[in-house]
Length: 122
Image 1 (cartoon, rainbow, N blue to C red):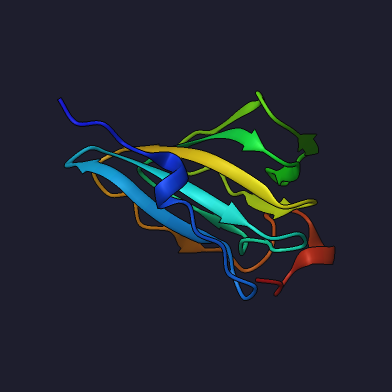
Image 2 (cartoon, rainbow, N blue to C red):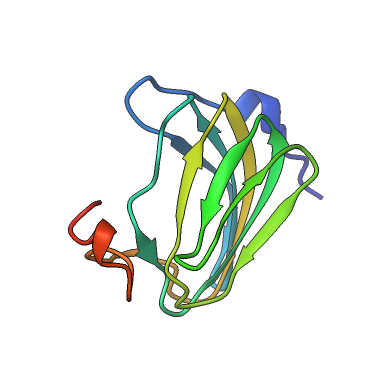
């Protein structure tokens, strides 16, 4: 049995949100993610991996190109494999992330499919 200490692993940076991997197998990874207010991920997808975020602390906006939802502690969002998405922190935020799939790399997307106003933003 292995015990993971999320608090000890958690890191923040003023420049960018910080992923700290806690465990990884060939088909799954879990991490804790520290976000400062206003930090955002690029518009991206994971073509062959599901991505699940559970909000432990703070609040953020989770966007799939169709709707933007503000979530807080206790909320969970699931982005299925291939779904374009972006995360933006509203306050200092701590997320627990699970990725499931053999190939979990992100692919940046040039804007939102079907949403011209965000074209070219990363």
